[in-house]
Amino acid sequence: MNRAFLVTCCSVILAIYARQACAASAVVIGAEDDWAPYSSALQQHPQGFAVDVVREAFALAGVKAEFRALPYSRCMAETRTGQLTACFDAVPNSLVKPLYLWPRLPLFSTRMNVYARAGSRQRGLRAKDLEGHTVGVQRDYEYGEEFDVNTRIRRRVVDKNEYGFRMLMAGRIEYMAAEQRIAQALFRSKADEFAGRFTLVGTVATPDLFIAFSKSAPDSREMLARFNEGYDKLRNSPRYKQIEERWFK
Image 1 (cartoon, rainbow, N blue to C red):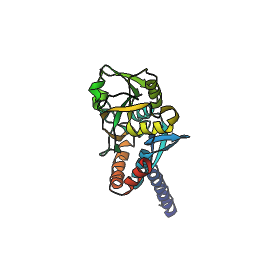
Image 2: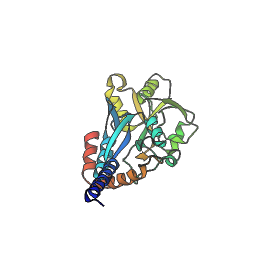
Image 3: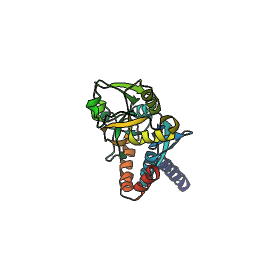
Image 4: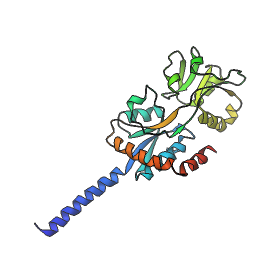
């Protein structure tokens, strides 16, 4: 066999492997577009605590993470059908957990709070205390097992937290459920409208939130393993705390 021909064949094979290796070292992740300071989008550019954590965890495993900003419900739906490899930030309650693959460790833990109009003297409300009452919730969000599976809570679904708080302010609902830092950030960003108008009356859950991986996307199992690898390194380094301090100071 001609030596030049062999060299050419080897070069082609190496080029194919190089392209495959390059393709395998990148992943497209869905990032929620309206959940600051964890994940939001400024001109379709995802930013936030969870965005930085996911990006750096993958980087430590040799993977370049690229993000698509989109609404949470669509993000999770496209992950479920395999159009996206993964989406964040999700609570793996009994309704959601079977539909996705999950990392070993959460991205963070938080508090899912319940708010009433300013002046309310109620305190310490739990999910069971909300039975028979009207509570605003954001579409397709999880608020912890006890709240999510309780069918006696009368939910009013909104597309954005701010819409729900406006309904609460107008007296159209009794309570609004929202993640603690999300609510605080919203009250600050819309201080002219919301400052001093609400009070914290309870906490329905203190869940762990994860990046959820698709069961059907072709690269999801490999990328889940790579994420676990990189995230272990990130959590065991000072960098995770630095990211927290950047977004939550």
